[in-house]
Image (cartoon, rainbow, N blue to C red; front, side, top):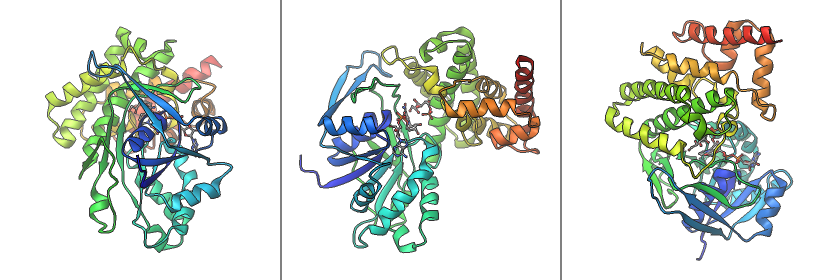
Length: 396
Ligand SMILES: NC(=O)c1ccc[n+]([C@@H]2O[C@H](COP(=O)([O-])OP(=O)(O)OC[C@H]3O[C@@H](n4cnc5c(N)ncnc54)[C@H](O)[C@@H]3O)[C@@H](O)[C@H]2O)c1
Ligand SMILES: O=P(O)(O)OC[C@@H](O)[C@@H](O)[C@H](O)[C@H](O)CO
């Protein structure tokens, strides 16, 4: 296949190799992976191909499929930053799947790539494929701060997206085992407002004018359910998300948070309740996919991010409270998240030390959730966070 277009993809991890890299390759783009994991970079350089194994998924009986990804290159984003900059300067697309907290650290490299980019090339299309609302806009803000050159900044177009495919932790091999379901939705707005910007041709992508309902629906259904199962499961000593969801108490709490987020999505976007119920049921099957062992540790990872203001628990809970709608199950899930104490997880360690540090309950609630006094959810968050702080004191 003649490769006429090039994509630089930051983050050759689970979703990078198993979804974004696979889709870009299948669409005829040359993929240059940029990662900071030296062993992963070596493996990508040594092996000319890797396989993506699709198993099970939302449709019972779905046939397993294996695809092979070839023709990629790999650069070390710690040791070869000048090389990454040169690749960006001549790329058509930059994508990321590094985790939202890493995005600021990519900004200066992208900014340098734009400064070196020829002004007569079409704008670089940048799509942050993270589980977060407006991740590309957030990245654009960081790139803007790194550039005092308006012309260079205008050499990029940043488009937000929603990306959905469950990829559990993998073995150390390059191959990825993944569900067959995949959804990648990108907003058209940035391309409509720029005559010189060209939408990349990526097979399997859905383009929409208004991304908000799609990203809210995914984050507040798939990820809210996932996180709730993971936090309750982890606190009961259950390592597998599927097993957590099978536990009657956890199952009931997951259904309860989903009933609340459904009420929000119906009220906010006018989504048809039956359609949302079908979406919920399909996603409960995905989360319990027997072919795809996923862990409560992975799904609960980075609890500080997950507890933040616009994320999967506090995000819908605060919006429900603003509408006078119930958010009790979501607040209980926030409480369950506070028990996530995983020494290998940096944010979990930070969370546990914040809970033990002795700040007042109100200040801690503001710090953890971004919700402030005067908000209708604030007293309820203070109550559960205060209760956890007192239980830490008793345990100490
Ligand atoms: N796994 C899933 O099911 C899934 C599905 C949809 C979206 N996502 C999102 O994709 C993102 C990545 O998740 P993942 O599961 O692939 O995680 P992952 O840990 O498997 O992959 C992240 C990769 O980013 C690399 N990285 C870290 N810092 C970097 C830097 N400065 N420069 C370049 N690379 C860097 C890591 O070495 C790692 O290889 C997250 O935002 C996640 O929410 C994940
Ligand atoms: O990636 P996180 O840490 O934001 O969330 C963990 C999982 O819920 C997430 O990775 C899902 O598997 C994914 O969002 C499904 O598309």
